[in-house]
Structure formats: C-alpha cells, structure tokens
Length: 259
Image (cartoon, rainbow, N blue to C red):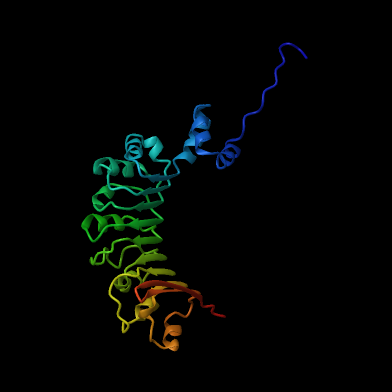
C-alpha cells in the first residue's frame, strides 16, 4: 500500500448521529460532548431535553446559559428552594419548552416574560393576575393539571385555553373548564365537597366527545343509568373513586359505545 495513502471513516450523517445518541447513557453523552462541536451540540440536545430538578445548581446553569436552556423541552421542579429570580430567568431562557411541571412553587410571577408555547402544564398556583396573564399567552395548551388543593376561585376566564382537551382539577371548577372547549378527558381530584344532587349537564357542553372520566362515585350515585348515558354518550373509560370506611377505593370499568 503506498505510503501516502490513508483511509478514513466517512463522517456520520447528523440525522444518524442523533438517532444513535437517543440510546446512549447520560454519562457517555457527557463524554461525547468533548469529541467535537457537532457531537457536543447533538449530545446536549439529548442531555437537556428533559430536565427534572431537585438541585438548585441546575437552575443556575439554565439561568446563565441560553444555549443550554433553549434545548429544554420538558421541565419538572420538585423543590421550593430555588431563588425566584434565578428560576424566573431560567424559565425565560427555555424558549422551546413544551411541558412544564412546577411542584412546591407558589408564586406565578416566575412565569412573567416567558415566551415558550406549552402543550401541557402542571399548575400549583391559585387565582392571581400573573397566572391569568400567563394562561392568556398559552392558546396551544391541551392539558392542564391544577394541583391546588385549596378552595380558590376559578383561575381563568372561559375565553382562555381554547384547545384544552385534557384537564385535572377540583370538581367545582369543571362548570367553567368544560363549556366551549374540546375536552375529551377529565380527572377530578377526590378531595373537596361532594354533592350527590349536583347537576351534570355541563359535562355535555364540551365541543369534543368526552371519552374518559375519573370522578368520585357519589357524584354519579344514585342518578339513573338513562341520565348518565345521555350525559356521557361517548364515554369509553370510567374511573370511580371514593372513600368507604375511611379506606380509599379505586374502581375501573369501561363503557364501549357501538356507533
């Protein structure tokens, strides 16, 4: 073989590299960040795509680096120890964020100035003007989980969240949450007042077929089967929850509607 002849492996196409990186451990992704600029960029996309935060140092990194923060698609926080200013700056930097879960964060002002467009939002906040302003900027939201267990007022007007298809909240919020929205899946928190005589008519005001419902059984009992069928004509999945003899009971059954 001639002395000047050398064979080199052709570079991996970027789309193939990205597919490979989906199956690489986090430790190896960190190592690959040191190979070259392309490997570093693609590896960071995977490393920072889904962030679960229990350490405030992660917030500090995202607050200081827009390059890393813009790679985040899903962000979950499980701590109340984050400095509000750093958390607010980190959220502002996550311009590509699509899924936001905030636990133990109770001041909605951390959302001020955020420009991302969410698909899902786990919201711990009660009614406030910053929350209303934020929700008004999120017409793309399809799923909201209102985590508040407190007896607070409805956190937004009927005109907000026009594309809401899935929602989890207290039962008394649903007369406002459902009408005029294409809600297909509802989960009711098991706490809160239970009124067996409650009116169910608002469930029929969704602009989409309600197919999944999780609800305390006392809201449905002892209503007639004909009333329930007329109220939920497209229901396919029903989960009944409740308390009997101080024990939490969960029962799952299925409704199939033959059209």
